[in-house]
Length: 513
Image 1 (cartoon, rainbow, N blue to C red):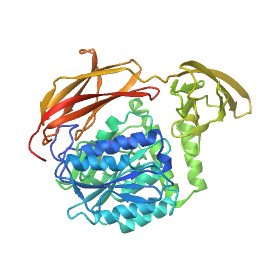
Image 2: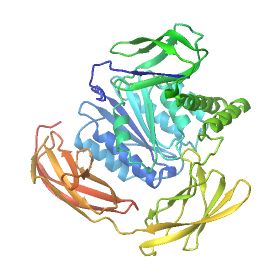
Image 3: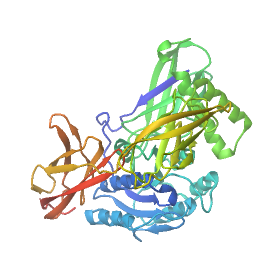
Image 4: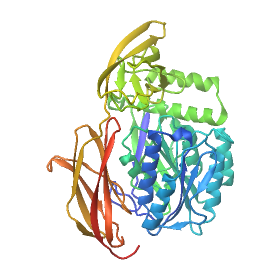
């Protein structure tokens, strides 16, 4: 087994720094079907707001919302200014979740909207769980139709949201348009994932990457087979197998990029065994299984493919849609802190368990569903709003593969009180373009604090040991008109209770955008 990794620096930037973004034409496509309710909608809106506030005055954009129908923000592309961004966010806030997901209709409308931009490439930024339920629902047919209709220069950048995200479909949609795909769970802190994703939108990738040994028969089963695309300032890796140990094998990695094409060469030794790299067989097996799953998604199930997936997943102990391995030695309840009315309870169990039933102290009995990609059991339930705050116990009835039944009792806490929050600004007046420091103090069970102001990118307020408080730095947008602005600080605890405070800031305006 081998892994070959390259780091790219086509534009001579500092490692980890994003290359400068050219003027972009963007269509934001937000899934507002009923499958996006609860925390998925929170993360989707957070993503959209991050992207909109990350636009530059040189960009143009439009926004489409889709479920069983499609709603468009504007008939023509919008230039970027604070008013346009606030208009787009208000458009989302005034909409509602409805119906199923007509993916083909949404993509067709996005492609039609792309023709309205009069310049360069167009990026479709899709925020969704990727589960078609109306119209054309076969993934491969939607992909075929999109590939046939999409013109050169239209790329899909897809931000998947949710534990049930249809990764195979969305990855393929990004691949055929030479775009990019990333996903998050609805329970994640997604701030880092947003920055990583947004840094690639509208940027020309390094594409058609190939790895060639000077002896073409030296390697076999090299992955990835498709989506051989990387971005400047990032790494890309091939993983594969070699037929026999040997010395001084020359490898050449090539790729295409507008700045200049990539060609890297290196001579390597292929050892009989190297204990420092004992992890590589499992890395290769995961890549092999991903490739087989992609073929099944596109071509349909094959007994040969399924047998190999099961064999590899059992040998290397990872989860696939055709296997269900559970890793924890006993049942673990998550979350332990619950808000009245909060709908999600999650349990991690022993490998032998095949069903889990939760018996709640208020009389409700709920069978739990196994989520294979997260290796966890989950159910939604209504915790009565009349329950007092405090610790409660639920019983878990677990049944293993042999039909044996076990019972465990787990504690959870009902918490209906929002976090107490105090905040202050470093100054009452600031010029457009200045940085304002926000200092906040909240209860210990607060998991997230965010500051928002008209026209500005939301800022996460994080604990600073030296200040003995949470601190955030908000950059006042250049060109913001003079006036008194409200700055809202939101605090959320682990039970998803939230509270907010508003502070006033006088801005002395700068030049318009």
